Image 1: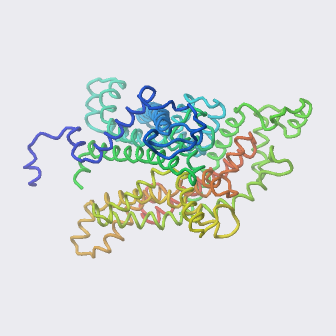
Image 2: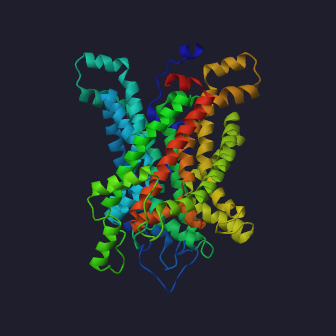
Length: 287
Length: 307
């Protein structure tokens, strides 16, 4: 009771609720800085990521090479930045593809409803019965090791969960009174999707986007582990980690540095997702 | 109950059939065939091979023949390993992956769920923060990083377990530990989240107000309801583990289904691809059914709603 009476202050905005906790903010800051540095790396990285220095060979971190050099004497800092450029791009593009397909599929299925919805969800069930490995490996085999098509393939298998969640959420929205009112006022189906469904789904979409990126990064790393990912001398975090595990005893820094960068990014994305969820759902803030 | 299981089993048949059809066309859509080698075969030889395996016929006829044999339990001959049938090859790999997968999932449940319960019992204390920090780290570490690290520590440095191979229980330790830890991490987080959420519901407050001991509230009232989504998660997770995991099998040189599957795709061994996909799909469907039955046992209302 007292809660109701006292809560007269203006409700906190999304940003205010997000910044209430320090960890998600820290995660966001880390990700923004890392992504900026990676995307600027073609201009600011200290060395060329693919120029070899066989005379130098592998050296541990030093003043000239902050992260050390790999077996072919290539500067690891430059390679981690270049790998980040590729991995972050894969993560973002594949997630965008997954969001685009998943959101449209989910909303349309729920809006049409009835048999169509059942059928659409069944299709998703059947696709998820196919092993993910089969689809990803087949795509990379069919498309060749073209990096742009790898983005699409990875995105193409990541939309299923998104579609399921959006469908459930939209079905809940559909029975809300403000949607009924809007229908009664003569709003078109498309208008309802645009003005009522999408704004109300924004939170869910944002949260699952931050949770999809780590999955995509893992998938990219897996494809690189198979040797079907990006081709040398191009590199990605997955490939760097794989190369690192091969020589982890002789040159541990070649594993530790890329793996730490990778893990920190995933950790930050995870905290960012939690923070966004709390910000969008004020109810969960109280505990 | 019995009828429900029968109905669910009957529903699997069309799904499996669709999986076979989808995989069949996917596998045939890949450019290159099983007989393409670095040195091309003479066209006559290739043609003879294709006629022998029935690959010269129209796809629809091939599919019909495949399904006809499948209904008799025959997965066909392997195209890449002459003289072997897919049944024999898969049959020799299933026990390996099933053993490794079962041990891993048991390990994951034994680690993940108690950690989640503990963390949710003392939210925001160090008993929550420290294990959940590790769980988050576990989620962020790919299997091909954790595997080599475990191998370096327990095999190379301490010499407790063999680094790779298969055959005796001791070979199982490192791969099962890798898979178990990687699966335990999300399990612990999920358990903690669900239990915290259920712990806030009205009937829990009522139970506490009635004076039921905190221990009983935590384990009977909260755990029994909060564990349901965890069981849902365990279905597909177990299916993925028992039907083979490529990364861990390659790292520890385990002759399981996961490696077989990826090799089959790379070799374009179409019958072998179909066979392994079918095994995975079957494992997934059966384990989802088992998960649903476990949930129904925990919460009988679930079965009453859709009999």
